[in-house]
Length: 460
Image 1: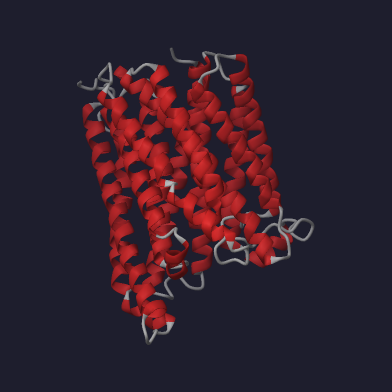
Image 2: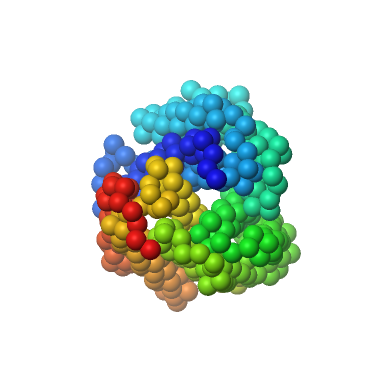
């Protein structure tokens, strides 16, 4: 059964994809600046492009999570959304605030932006990923609280399912942990210690709950497997994600001035962090294998399976590769970290948002058989493989660059100066840039798939 209030998810999904395009464009600019240092300087310095690139990533994923919640909660709760009007109002507030923030980064020197936006009253700016002006952070809190109220009331008044309870737990965790963005102690060790309570505990903690609940919802819909079976898997996955993710925060505490015991705690529990992602891969393939129906939206199934596999590779395998303290001693701050970050974010969060958009948008647009046409799905399959394969190559090129970085200036008997090392590995930065262009072509194909084939019925 479809609910009319699910339609509020549509603008969130459209905005998410639009911001995703912006994020990739700025990523391509940054990639070129790695090898052509004065590209677009001084109009767009590297530090500004980097701020825009990472902030757009965070914002568009949040739009995706919010759209996913507005879509699945009414269906799971068997109840219309508490206030569609509130959802639309918060959408415009969040979108305008995000746009103003990006414009501010691009047009106003950062120190001046801080003066203009109340940072002297409550200093919160200047930290990586949390560069948003203080007034914008306050706006984000207002939006998240309104969003949680809307979703929470709908869940409480309707049918309770494991999917919605796990989702709500993840969303509440997201909101609570963001409050640490307002805590900015003058002691640098304390600053970094609590900074990770937002950054790590979001992406390696509560976001994993959001991801798992969305994946479970899509698998229930496209496979027809008994809900009880999927819910049992979900319990195990989120338990492992929380146990390993919470204590695994310690792998960020190795070299910032914290007690030595974090090297043990961080190493041991970080080494266990691939387990929930392995379980997620087994979960997705098992559910598809045991499916009781052939859903016409074949490409949504592909995205769901791809999410589990690439998340395991990026967050699990590449994360484990450099998370043990004796290894991290050499690899910390190299392109190996960037390789892990790119594949992990793409697999775990980008792909799950694209999964729910791929499943929900044909329904929201009134497509026959709840799926896009066969021609449109073929376009999207091409998009899936172009983006996924190019991201794998981006990861491999950055990994090789990182290994050479470690060898040339950290492990060699005669270490090279940093910029000499950068020149020697420039080939891999060029290759990364080429792979990035192919990724962008895949994203264009993904968007194009929504406009081809009309309402022609999809073949089974």
